[in-house]
Length: 160
Length: 111
Image: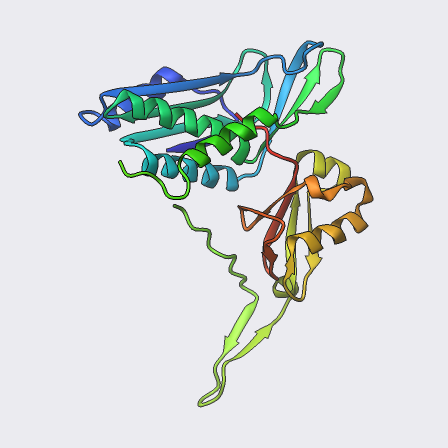
């Protein structure tokens, strides 16, 4: 399930729902939560604005979950991503993967959040406490990480 | 994998005369134009978020981006920009066809 929404989310409730849906199939659940932090190195962040491409965001993230299902043993997959005005310390993104085995759950969860950073059409604009605003640039390290996942699994996805 | 359906424009009417060829009448522009969406920095630089562009026949993303740069020089260099065609990431070598939804944006920064 993929949710793209402005509202905050309750990760405990989401985890409980995931456990219910994967009851008996999942020996492991791995979750990742991303929070707003100071992006600028030498100035305090006041807030973050996340712009998104409605429709394409949901489809891209669904595609990533589907790729994860092809590459690893995944029983259930849940991603929630927020957009709009967010403040320091607030939750931005939640990824949860349920699997029979912890290795698959860890890898699928890490793959989804890594690939999401370079594929899902979101853009962060940071406002500093000084009032200055700027758009956050994609980090080369993020692009390389996604590339590494694809290289590992090229040319075809591994069997389960 | 999810597959993207191509947009279906209601303005195209097909008439099939008895025993004749199918004649397609296009009443408005969508079949000879594209919907263009600008996001984030690109929207700020261009000064708008959405517009229609005439496009009578397919062009490559690279050629279309050259036209974009001519129209909005402030977007240069356009080689850094990303394209999505019908809500799917598309390399600059992809073909843009009449009726497509084309999005232009800087590399994404979600997560």
